Image 1 (cartoon, rainbow, N blue to C red):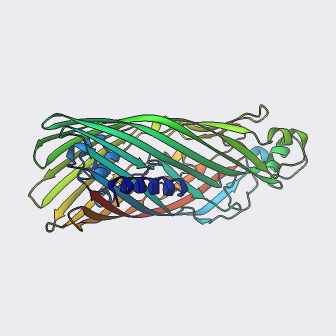
Image 2: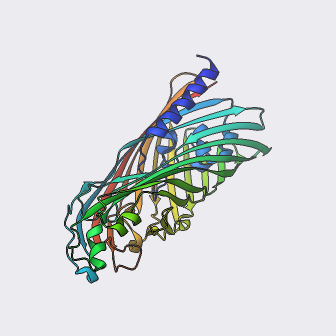
Image 3: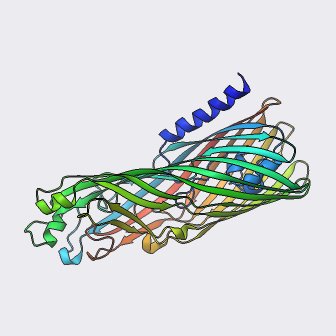
Length: 448
């Protein structure tokens, strides 16, 4: 196989699988850190300083190119297996509607969805000082799914977000110990949301003699968009085997355009007109990220590393869907997320010339406060424990495997409906969540 066909087939495979795959959030919020098997083994400690030593470091810092000799093609497949069990769900209608119990399943079980996240990387050396890179990744995503009969169905049934990020990068060695780099992000985003609509309560509130909860319908919106952002980074190597990195990933602004549809709308002229399907638009801004990393070889066989990452989640104030239909008011969910931190520590031991073993732990702070936690993303603080290994199969081929078990704190939802806020006609809802995530990643690196 020629070099050109190898690179082409790698990138084509990544793009096809990424478009097809539903994406669960493996890290806090809806961030997907699972873009490197060699990084997975250390809980991504040292990733910003490219402690992995391969082209997957491009996802975390474009200046990772400065550590790569020659040319590389890397393909990664990360299997993410979340378990998020919902229990003790209890819903009641607003007091002004009588406060009746919302009937439905109180223990809908596991709402997480398994997925495979692909990513692909190319690194090309133009000269000892100038290098080019290309990363195709899926940096943001989530997928939760409830049965349509669950108690909290008016707050959410299905939620999914998929992104594909194409990032060309260039690095320049400014001084023997300093590399700077930058790149663009061409990002595709696609989302789908659905929830039940309590038409019985809506009619009862207008004086129609009908029982709340007696006429349920379902609403769904979906849309997609392309957006553009950038990355920038720096890598400083004061001594051989010691590196410090800092990187910035910009926000990408999306205006998702799509359509809405409603089923089960009562044959009332006002409701038929208000809940008629129409084009929709939703503004979404992914958060910007600042990362810091360090990598140090204590001996020729043993290295330690660390990472810290700040994510500007406070951009996510609300989820607002605007309808082209002038009779349909915006659908709004208050989010009010907080900025959060991720901290990781890890180590790598070179067993021999071919085998490297890795270990890492991390703390992943949730951006979601108790007051604004919703069934769509019932997030809480997470704790990572990871192991991994890399093996040099031939002079040109290396394989890596990484595994993480992610523990999440128990989460609670307590939402109130007074018929005037963003939760109007969705009902009061309380529920408990217990979650964990298993991640296993496989990677092949080819040098040429």
